[in-house]
Image (cartoon, rainbow, N blue to C red; front, top):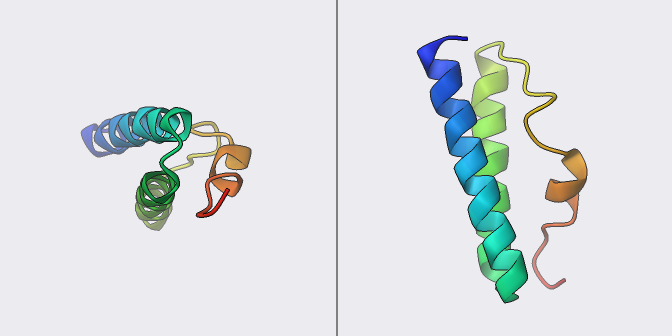
Amino acid sequence: MSQFEAALRGQVQRARQTLTAAQRAGHDYEVHLHAARIRDLLDLAARHGIDTGDWIDPAVLESATVGE
C-alpha cells in the first residue's frame, strides 16, 4: 500500500468515526457533511486507481442523508 493510499484510507476512517458520532448525536447536517467528505475521498481514490471496495459499507453512505 502506498503512502497516498494509506493516507486516504486513514482520512476515510476518521471521517467514518465523525459520521458515526454525528449520527448518534442526531446532527443531521453534520452527518451529511461527513458523508460527502467520505464520498469525495473515495472519488479521489478511484481517480488514482485505488480499489476502495472494502473501505466502507455503501449502506452507511446511503443512509447518511439530510433530514433523516
